[in-house]
Length: 520
Image (cartoon, rainbow, N blue to C red; front, side, top):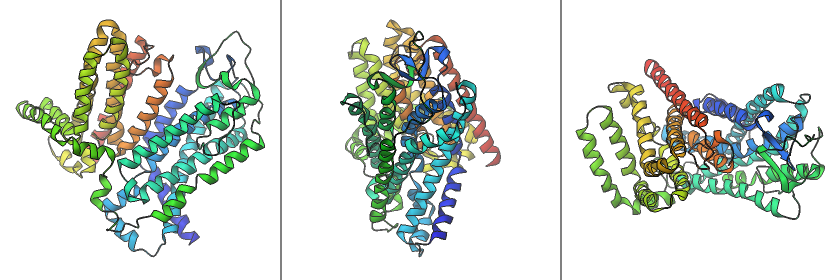
């Protein structure tokens, strides 16, 4: 291996990623999530609660709580942000150059991996800087940077290595380069989250070497200072009549730290597999056309359901008769459905269930519809870029800005098609819940279109959407997180707030596309 070559390629990889707009969008999302994550105790919620009492916002408490929550986010978002570099090489024509270069597979892949690790470290550093700023405003003890560094290294270090290793492996082996790999990693991430049930239900909490997110290590550390069965990390409620608890500055034991070091070593296993399975851009193993669409289970399902695509033909005919924006939006909706027959099947099933189910089950159905819609809509605003049609879209009347409004409207119409019947039935029994569902769909559609157009990749919104959906379902008593009214805790201010978020996202996307039109 050539150390100079690895260093040069790694720095180039990190700089290329840091200059992308998806990085800026991710950083803005990180800042927003940070302030949502660390609640003001005056609101009756805190970051860590043990035995009903809140834990004071010292450096150790803020470091433990924020690192535990951020590790789940970065484990998911980090993978999707790092994914796709090999496919980009194939689409841009660089694959042949790389494949013919004298650089060995190990050197090339190690450099790519190091660049991805540096990129995630930069995002984590930005997150930690935001937490430090939050400590200055809400902290209840001295700011101790070394405590933060130690906790972030032990909790998030193995997670960063694992996410970067998996992203490289899934890009290096042709069968996992497409949506099959995306789905498989999401299952892996969910299994990491599911480990917490075994930790809490066991005889005693213990750090697990294959828990790369570090949640088991955090619970095992907190268990030394209180009842781990009555410990909540995240947006937790507490009894204000109980005296607050204070964690010591240095909470990590040698045993738990050792387990995290073992986890860091195990996180390198996917990297070693990548070096073994790397396709080296060989035409007989991977082709440019296949880099965009793999024969994933979803692709196979769409091929089996291809006859359902005919049901979109009336929408095409109607869009041709309508003039102006309405016809164009309807054409986008029809194209999305025709390209994904599985979505037509899901849409038909959603309408039947929305009419047949009891009203108490409608919120659960709505969440399932929103989840399916999010995966479908994440690619709507990036479809032009994926097909190299951005220039054509910018050349027509209205240019990129008008195209942006059509994509936003199409995403919203698709969302209302999935959830509209449920919203109408909820409007009779629970009008505020129905309002939350519509407002949440508008906000999500605006964010999907903004992030897709600004970053050029569907994975930016998809990763944040999936994590946000997980947090929203888990936080049952926080009105601001009841985005689509699943729990029924949404209030009128929270509904109006999400309408405001959607409006700001729509305006930001419009201004961005006007800028792109003026300078494109």
